[in-house]
Amino acid sequence: MGDLDVGDGVDAVRRFRERIGVPALVDVHTHFMPERVLDKVWAYFDAAGPLVGREWPITYRHDEAERLALLRAFGVRAFTSMVYPHKPGMARWLNGWAAGFAGRTPGCLRTATLFPEEGVETYVREAVEDGARIFKAHVQVGAYDPNDPLLRPAWGLLAEAGVPVVAHCGSGPVPGKHTGPGPVARLLAAHPRLRLVVAHLGMPEYTGFLDLAERYGEVRLDTTVAFTDFGEGFAPFPVEERARLAELGDRILLGTDFPNMPYPYAHQLEALERLGLGEDWLRAVCHGNGARLFGLGSEAGLVPEAGPGTGGPPA
Image (cartoon, rainbow, N blue to C red; front, side):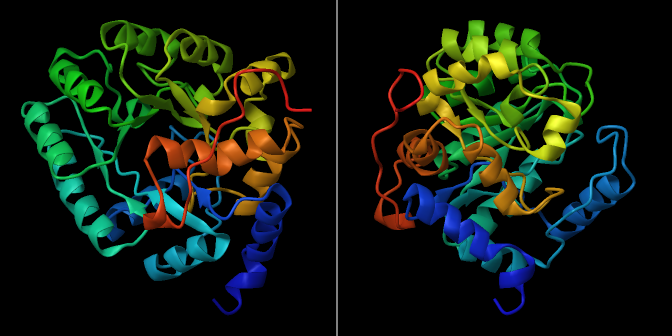
């Protein structure tokens, strides 16, 4: 790793893992994309585009090999390649790239995506049958209604197959045409068994998405950006809702947005730690919940472990 150890906080992440007692991290919200697509994403962030709305520096602007080496140095043994289309005709191509990436990249959970277009049911079925383990839906960037009739068969297929879907469906950092808990509530009413993972904890509509998690047992939430100094600056998490985080402790998953995060990786972890919900909660969020969801064992150097239960904060 060379000088990445110092400049990118490897020691800080290692110390965090040692403090809470986990052998590895499971990060359900990381971005690996075709190079030309990622370059365009970074350029959009650099320009503070309309869906970013603020200065958002990319902390880990390394080449792909360096980014993978860095994740491994952090102790991340299972991660995703969150790809997403912004127009018709992209999803199938992105799925092909992501399948190849996962095939050559140990630790990557094979990721796929979808878009409301003709043929979506076919390519979603193909991805599931070929081994996709997680999907990404970006309602904000795609500017589509998750209840679009074209998507109904695909949602039904994913619900039946039990494949998790990480969905950026909250209205942070800026609202989209179809963001917020309302459209997701309608989606879940039609597909109550859908394993939906609400990205960014649904910021800033935290309460509405926590309500949905309490109503539907397969709904989960990832921590991406939430609780960090950066996230708290524009979408603070309500202090009065912290008890619900503890009660839903078996369905909160570590997500970071790596490499597109505007702060060190360790800061996302330390932001979770300073919530004061206890080491059992942290172990579940950073390791056990993801290991269980994906059935991870020796393939990723992980052993599934019991969650923190459904009571209040651990003593």
